[in-house]
Length: 154
Image (cartoon, rainbow, N blue to C red; front, side):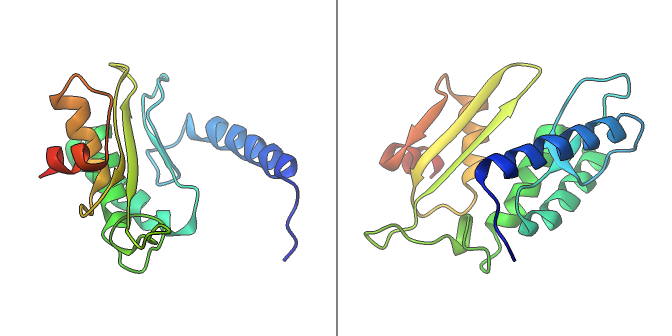
């Protein structure tokens, strides 16, 4: 497998994004992307960067179909990846830092309200995106990190 330059990767990503957006305007909600964009159909796209995100996209689509909430769909879809011990990128299976401690970061944004919440260096909590959402909804903060994020989560 050959690896191109970052510039080639970004160019291909832009082309793919354009193709997905043009095709999705007439399509039903799909498990392709994770953003809510306004259109005449006002349907979300669920998008993941890595292959382990496909089950998360599928869960997000199901949650969206049941609840109609893009935020619920995004959170519950990401929770699936966070709870997978075989996923070393996020959550339960996250790779420890140089000190041997798993620290997680997450953020969530609500487009219509322009609100956001995030956590950084969160320890001992699997569902970091859920903590980020609670920060967005329950505090005036946009980000909590380290011990303060853990205290808030607990």
